[in-house]
Image (cartoon, rainbow, N blue to C red; front, side, top):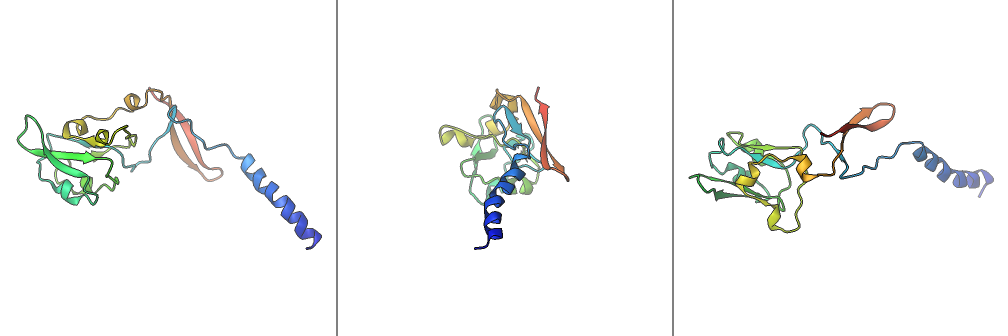
Length: 160
């Protein structure tokens, strides 16, 4: 082995480390800081009960069989119930809905201690999610900015 090869093998790791030391960290302090979803982020659904005709196309289009049509008290039609334990957030249900009664929000915080807590009935789906209610500790939302010189950076915005 030549002296030049040995020096290169010894110095190469230091060059790699030096490149990463000069960059700012990308770690986020979740749930105090939350990265805002991109424009087309698929998250929790909202059901507009007044627009829903109970046709069941959303359940038919779901490849994961995560949607079931169930009756709602006080209404004669059946409405979708979504099991987020099965849902892959493909968006077919939203795309196929003829009356646009289903919409997706950028809120991806869906968690539960039990399997039953991941099943959202039509009444629960019709309530718009509030990020401050889901994450009471949330103080900042990070907006991704693509910079040619530095790559992806994040702008902090205080959440009210």
